[in-house]
Length: 444
Image (cartoon, rainbow, N blue to C red; front, side, top):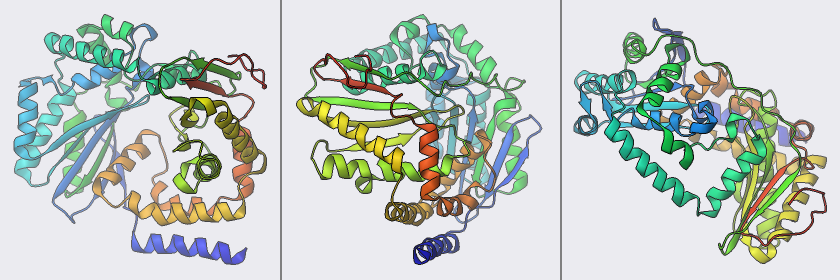
């Protein structure tokens, strides 16, 4: 046992020595935004991202889609700039302009050369897009039509049907159950005023997190953070979301679909991003179903029995506990057998935890792969955004491999037992014949 511990410790040392974690500077801008900055002059590139608490969970239930369309239309027209001006301006500079959107966050990101001429022009466009969006009526109508068409198409796809039903079963009336892209009924009702109101309420200086990575000085970073946030609506971040109900009733939905395979999802609320059990749950899930071909679910379901090409499990940590999900696709005639095997594998894992051998292999895999998580400016930028938005310790990257190495079998078993009850989970099967009974007593 001592030899195994020494091996994992050695791997930690190698990773820390060969790939030093970045030094994170942080401050609050004059506008009130939180700023995290890593100075790196290795390449002449600047990466910037601004994140705000403006994700889909802040939608109203009867107008799901407002948050997503607000984010989507930001770069489709800003003060003094048409959508073509914005796209052409970035392309002429060789800059990359993008963003991301989920239940918690809406963000805009920029990658540009760090020389002053190109950097300043790209940042000017980004600043206007973020702080002076126009939300043109004609463009909203066009994008609504595109989104509605996409949503209607998604309603025919088994994976989309399963995701929507699963989120509703897991989160009930909580805002995390709202579809990230909205729904047809909600999107049809959205007006320009809805977008303007949402922007004013959620794109505020007090909730902004600015992540900056690259070839500039601290003084330049301070100026950029202020430039990108000074003209955002003033005020604090929106009120926190209601708490997620951690224990849900067992349920099972069987939804008919002509797909050749059954799409199966099983899960429950899991953990928040700052949960004290984050590392035991993270390492444990790597063993259970997050480690690809070396995971226990893959071994039991695919390798030993050939019931599915792929089977997985994951936690989606958010501000409030996001979903813990197990998923697979399998032939309809073997759906019930595959589902029962997944349930049995999960129940055994929760009851007994991983073996020491499994834990050692997971630690070696995670620690050995950690340098690849921070091997580019873009990846570090993403971590800066996460650390700032979720109020994680600034030493998060420094501590990562040590926290993984410290996880024990007992901690994994205890954390899973407290967070996941295999008798209180939601199950969704899309593309399966109806069943008349469930041995666990769940509804069908």
